[in-house]
Length: 104
Image (cartoon, rainbow, N blue to C red):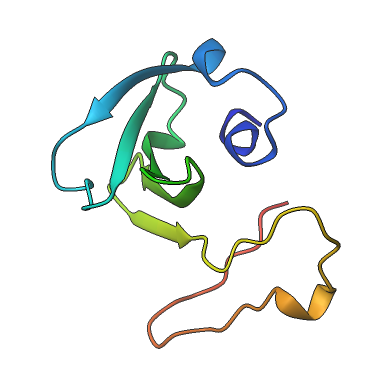
């Protein structure tokens, strides 16, 4: 639930995470990168990086580092505000070597 709060804005991030400005490997030109580290370790997430576009202030990527060191990057592009989005616009495509694991 704490991890999902990053995506759905259900709770203040500062309630669950220590936040700092990232100036390392996860930084990208044209963006500010916030590093979020869980205040309470639970074995699920080591860190989350939110990449925020310097010009628009929009979050353009979310990078998660699992407790095992696995890295997942979700890139948000073609962002459109203020209008309904058809379900067909959301696509998932498997890439070689990736495995879908369903949690229950």
